[in-house]
Length: 350
Picture 1 (cartoon, rainbow, N blue to C red):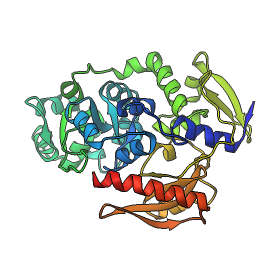
Picture 2 (cartoon, rainbow, N blue to C red; picture 1 turned 90 degrees about the vertical axis):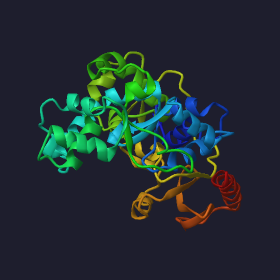
Picture 3 (spheres, helix red, strand yellow; picture 1 turned 120 degrees about the vertical axis):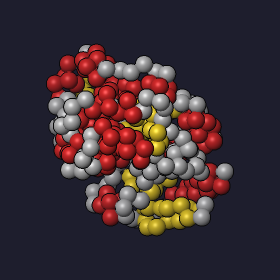
Picture 4 (cartoon, rainbow, N blue to C red; picture 1 turned 180 degrees about the horizontal axis):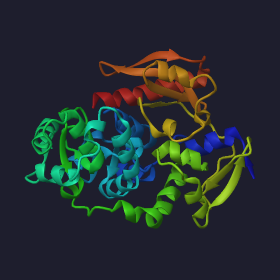
């Protein structure tokens, strides 16, 4: 079965709950999406507001404070918001990505070959959570002569370190304070060796439920893990389609497929949302020639309409300021933009 570009676009939006909002809880949505990009503090709140019928940002903050939700480096070695259980699983699965960046990123390289590093990090954190500066200072005592910045970055890559509140809270702020994921959440650690092959198939299935149908290259774009083609082919029970270019798309049986005729409403998303970052072919949700506008805009907050990027916006003093429209909106789209603007401004005012 061949799926058209429009079908793939609408199916992605359908599975992302961007065609219509749903009434599930924030934690359920975060699990469905296998985490939310949280590199920029506002983005996960906007991601949930765009997908949920009712959303209380302070309730989400309370779950961060209780350790039910956590912020840590996971997919693509970038900060994500996960449930506690998913944090342990997804971080273990993406550990090879973190190891790769330790070896390849110049600023981390001075610390890359140090022996006994994980034990040293655990020793420095033995008495409890520490601000990043204190963690770096403690590691310098273990490894004199190595730049503190390199040591701190390797610590983030080497072990699942959680960014503690108030960082990441709604209208909160705070410096980097790290704790060990198992201690902060009480969730037992997952060994990276246990993820593949035992747990990787389930992670791939979950990706497909939220982002599929997709190629192995798409899963790499989402996770930064490489050589996934053989892994995906070995997963039992997947179905396959083809796109208009003839590429094989993998999917979960009975996952919903759009017809391509569904209405795709206006939504306001944050600077970073995994709906933009999880396919090798970014044109699934970005019309040809428009994605560069997002890049030139410094990854500005985005406006989608008709299933694609149509503009950029930014929050200014609690208001939505449209920075640029990439095409003229229809009358209905202008009405939808006004409605979404009101919704987001109510969120910002809360």
